[in-house]
Image 1 (tube, helix red, strand yellow):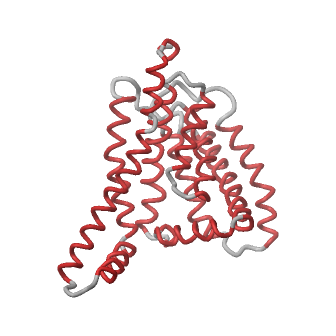
Image 2 (cartoon, rainbow, N blue to C red):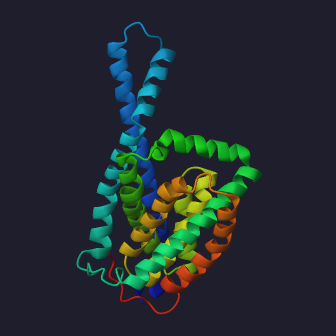
Image 3 (cartoon, rainbow, N blue to C red):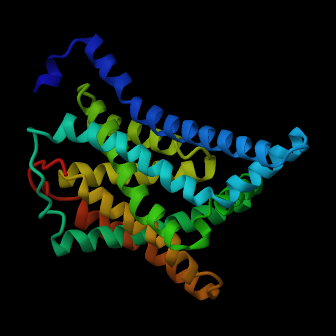
Length: 288
């Protein structure tokens, strides 16, 4: 393969390129939020003559919090407008076939659903442990979730969580970051660990970053085995569905149900891994 003959300098260069999706991911959000904040302050300064700086800041913050989900969706779309052409022209155009028939085989779909359910149960107990071991961090995470508007279960939050986030994050991390690391000649395990670590880092908090790292690692394996970016996208959607709607359905369930879930979680992970990640490659690499 070409990667085996690369000079050390080209390997390092491609390694640095693997950091760019994370930089772009964060930069788009920071720049967009800064622009929106500036516009909000400008409007308030014009409309609210006589207001002091503190009152202006408080009102601008309130306006931004009321529109936080709209801001998040727009920033997700803007990020996708950058990363999708980037991935397509670099790794797909004239290089791969857009064919995802292997991903939609019933056994593979069922395996991804089962694996997502098992991983969701594991994350659920991870959150319980974090609440017991690090209550301060857990309180910060819960406040962040409430402020983001994701907990509202609106149509907009559903689109952001179940559609835009899985598509955008898979393109950025399993699509771009992992592929750049792969092109350095790095072994799969090392490349997968690094892309998962960056995926956890971009979530910008320790609680979510911890389980995002584990999820990113699993999604990297699914991508490698399937040869299609559609597979981790679908599994990411399944997991986010569990974390959003199944979590709501299981709120306040009896202790016996939680004990049953504690038993079933590892079983689902084992069965899901066997159906999706063990055994031969699903098919040849198809890029999508």
